[in-house]
Amino acid sequence: MAEQRQDKAALISETRRRFEAECLADKSDKYDSRDVERLQQDDQWVESYLVWRHDVVDDTLKMIDESFQWRKEYTVNDLTEAALPKWLFESGALFLHGYDKEGYKLFWFRVKHHVRDPKQQLEKKKLVAFWLEHYAKRDHGKPLTVVFDMSETGISHIDLDFVRFIVNCFTDYYPNFLTKIVIFEMPWIMNAAFKIVKGWLGPDAISMLKFTNKSDVQEYISAEYLPPHMGGTDSFKYSYPPLVDDDFQTPLCENGPITSEDEHESKEELEADTKEPGELNEEPSPSQKKMNSVEQVSKSEETDKTEAKPKNAKKALTTFKGPLLHISPAEELHFGSKETGEKKCLIVLTNVTKNIVAFKVRTTAPEKYRVKPSNSSCEPGTSLDIIVSLHGGCAASLQDRFLIMAAEMDQPSAAGLPELTHFWKEVPRTKVMEHRLRCHVVESSKPASLTLKESSCNVPAKTNEDLHVQLTHLLQLHRSLQEQVDRCLWFQQLSLVLSLLSLTVVAFSFYLACVQRS
Image (cartoon, rainbow, N blue to C red; front, side, top):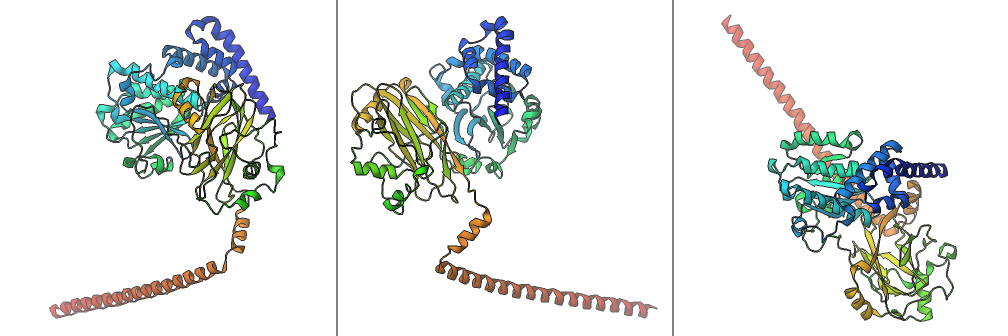
């Protein structure tokens, strides 16, 4: 693994060196200086180009050159919501919403809302670039899945130039950014057109095309993110404004004490979580860590809160270093599956500024999670723990996301809830730091046989009685079915005998007729 990282680092270094020597000297005026600066500083971006071009530096440099020229031509770094016409967003032809079964974001192209018009083509292409750049910056270049919803479309909606532009964005301009293209209910009249599209994709990307209909689209996207006309249950209806952001919402639990809706999680159970001190985060000294005054808890309550940390809250190995807060873990919250049973995660926020930082936590699945605290503030130089718990019998999903928003406050002491509410209404969006976390489900490491054996040992007597009743019922059904089968066989045999008799009579009659004639 270490050797692979060294090899990758060497390729990144070589790509940068050759880019400066071979591209910048002749075409520096054809690039946006912000892209050049990012290429020199962002290892992940360079690596994504290398991955998409199979670590061949010559091909990688060619792609960087073409994509940088394209980015400057379409002013990608300056594409904002305000820079594009409002009617583009209102049409609802292109938007980001939901996740596929692997947890990748869905980029929807509702073809029936697209009207082919050469005069509007450039603006529509810029809308595609806006959405892709918006998501790339927001989720740090995590790939997405494109959905061509072609229901209720016909020959009048075919716009090969626009489709080619979308395809080229992924093959030539946004490296390692595509997982698959799901095409829903493509009309037969468009078969010839999509043979051309396959040629544009190239051999590596053809396997990413998934032609689906209502009966099999859920192989790739679960019903919760499919609209009803695709056989799903998603009640989402696109509208603008505001810009679609998957409706991050406040989780169930606010700053107050943990609600009693899950009474089976008693205080004793929470206290039991701390019986393994070696697994907990290292506790900072009182001078390093303070509880803000929003909750105003006593020492005993602080102890209870500490004891409520999840058992798997080991010191995180990754940290996102933002301008206001350092957030750990950096990318994923690890929840257990139903087998492992771990239902809690810990997020640690560290204020790296000289001012109080207000923060709030939102999620795409507010009915499944409770967060404490979800709306509070963090004093300068201190750390604060956030406990994220699954609610009731809910299970974590790869599609679930959390959004942490933070902004500096101009006041000498910690703020209460009324002040925070007013602050979030007034603070400009440009001053808000945002960071997103996704969920990861950790499967059980125990063998299936061991899990079954443990489960069988813990089956109560009442369950055994229930199983006995069910087994008796099944045996009765089996006997009833057997009797029906036997009756069917008897009728079948009787029918066969009668048929043979009929044939015999017919044959004998035919014989007598022949004898009489002779």
